[in-house]
Image 1 (cartoon, rainbow, N blue to C red):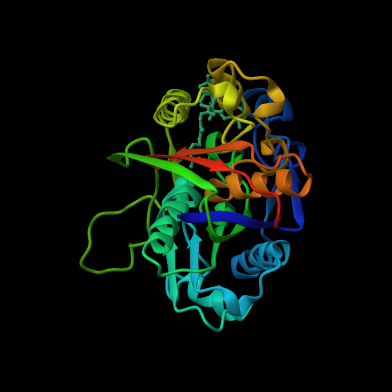
Image 2: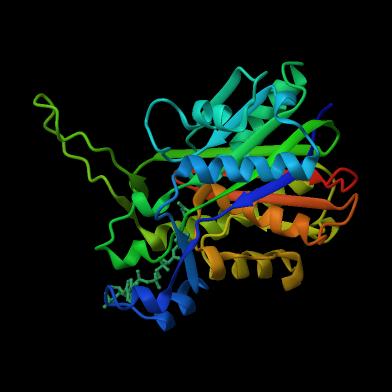
Length: 323
Ligand code: ACO
């Protein structure tokens, strides 16, 4: 037996930046951004820290699960970069949330697939008997990692955090992860220019070959979902909802058509938040959970793809009893 998700949470920055506002800052338009991506606006950190956002999402999930902070014995935080490189975001958020019994904690940097990799790691902790109640938080400050002079990437992303509480149970049916190692299609560099010894100069900001990622994403989503469903003797019609990484509405639509599913089974929030990397799946999961959209006992597929290149696909049996 592994885990069941018993609570979810989310937090987004206060500041909304619309496509129209971006078009006053660079040569772009609401029409270009929304027709190619579905994005209308995104949230961006201003006065908040990423730690505050991470803690707010975690607190929200604990409340939703009816769990107290001192019950948590595993904390997994996924992020491309916290407020500090060290201490880790998980160390700081454990303090912020008062997780007094928790010493098992990790930051996981697996870009847009972070939430799936965290669920996979949590599965191992539960099976090994090393965790009884876990908190997973995916939190991203994409606005700090972008080249705001590159209109082809900076309009696509947003900041946010999503979280889930995991308790022993039979909610997890399976997880599949894949990796095709390489940084040529999407990467975020490091600031290493200060070393007098190093003569390689990485570009710090996010760089992406959008068309390559687009092709990879559509094929990866449908292939990986097909594989996990087949291995469990299921077909796409047996799934209640598909909670997919929110990178581009056209990618979601294309995958939906290939899976031959109606629009209501592939919900999206990209129009309001942009691409929040690893936070996008748990943010959407929380919206669906709180709206009562997910029925007790229904099969839910989570699927992410991103830098690495990685994919992560998870099959869940949703339980609403404690949600
Ligand atoms: N506003 C106006 N024009 C723009 C903008 C902008 N913001 N950005 C680029 N353009 C221009 C380009 O300069 C180009 O002009 P040109 O033809 O005169 O050279 C033109 O628009 C077309 O550019 P393309 O890059 O070819 O546009 P495309 O239709 O491929 O759409 C997009 C780009 C939206 C990025 C698309 O490729 C995509 O969504 N790819 C997937 C990206 C993705 O999923 N990323 C996330 C996955 S990984 C992760 O989540 C971390």
